[in-house]
Image (cartoon, rainbow, N blue to C red; front, side, top):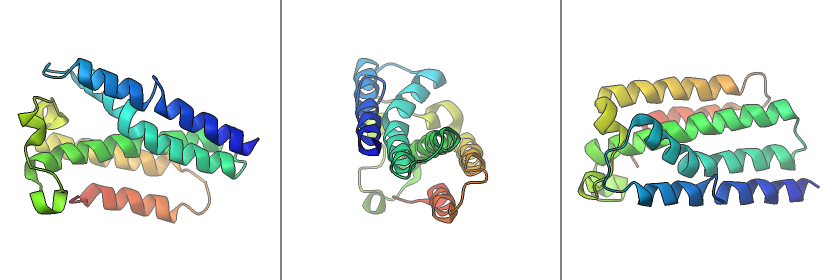
Length: 159
């Protein structure tokens, strides 16, 4: 039953509510100036969906509770959103060699990013807020040191 639950979680993350749906929106809205809610929807469907699936599969494989599923989903959504915002920032201020893609490529491709909407300082504040929300979502769960460490690394990542 746990394996079936994991397969269901992964299928949902890949489908129209997740990565495929997010990619479809990304392509549909290419070249359009997006609002913050539109851009957030893409980020939650793409980046956060995959991280959410990994977290929820871990809970399912361990036979976790509904409360643990909700905590893992909240952690993943906040972590994934903060991760993507940091990616937006690195596309402006990152080192091309370290970042692994040409700096400014989002702008060249006509993509709206949260740097366009919030500026660099605004993005950093939102990253910090979502990072704290991710950590808080873990609540009283046991053995969360690694998950908290991932959040702290995310806040300062250069690649």
